[in-house]
Length: 176
Picture 1 (cartoon, rainbow, N blue to C red):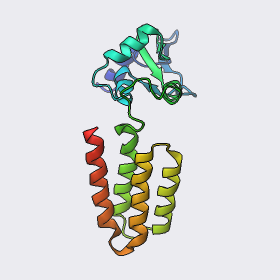
Picture 2 (picture 1 turned 45 degrees about the vertical axis):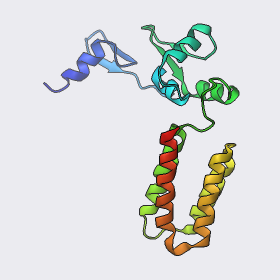
Picture 3 (picture 1 turned 90 degrees about the vertical axis):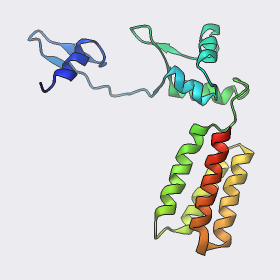
């Protein structure tokens, strides 16, 4: 029946802001300020942990900012976790300055750029230079500077070289 899965979700309380009026019609209030949330496993991946146990330890110690919903489930607000990670670069000790999750959007953007036939090379170079300045990770800055120098030195074969660099970056992030 149409609408049955949605009705079941509403009845079980899985949809935030759902309520029933006196005529037994269901309404869903629109959440104007949607907070971006991380799960425990997402925070563990950001911190480069292989399991979620260290995150539970930090929750029990009270050293990581977290929230609880009405059901008692734990979640993390993206802004607070990002601020905590920025303030505590050595906590957790195994977290690299740049995680795999940070590299994925840049690799995808480079792959999209390499597929384009009529790409403005100078705007591509400017994008990479501005990206390299926004990170304090020397290894990433070095890789991005290498990409810039390759593009500027030989504009005729830049697409093949970028694909080569993309594969090397992907290999290096998978090995960390």
